[in-house]
Length: 215
Image 1 (cartoon, rainbow, N blue to C red):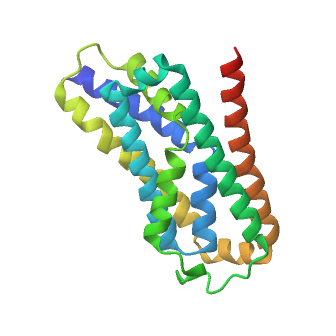
Image 2: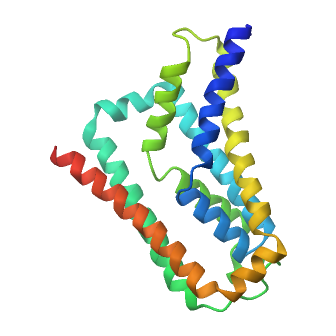
Image 3: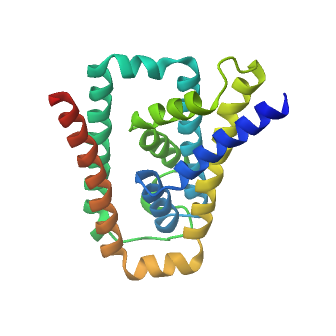
């Protein structure tokens, strides 16, 4: 690849990295899984986030996000469904606030496997189709009209590394013993706050969708 294409790829990946680090439902989920369960569960969730990011990147490069932008009802429907899913997660987190915590840090919390945490994280990552449109917008703004095939092949796995890498850092930080000790002390309020924020983000996504439908 030429120096220009390399610089373009770094610009795209830099923009994606800044977006990944922005607080949102993905951050809340990974941090909570890490602090309330184990480092393994948090890292599994980080992989799920990376897979979701790679999927969105692939869809954007394939031009499927253009379909979402052109077919307004489909895009709005997916956003509403994503919002409902986030509200559901928020309710589940709130309901679990009073449940006792057993063996934090051992990976046996409520019997949930690391694989199920990966699946929940993946579902959370793809619950907002607006992310795919953001990816497509970044690609359209920064990528040349006829990029080489190598650049197109590199982007999805590179975005996986960025997304999974960032959330792995989050998992490592929140699965530390000190973080888990603080969580155990304030579990009720931490879980309730996480549930409210997660549910609020879902309600916001739904309201944005309904407002767009009216306009």
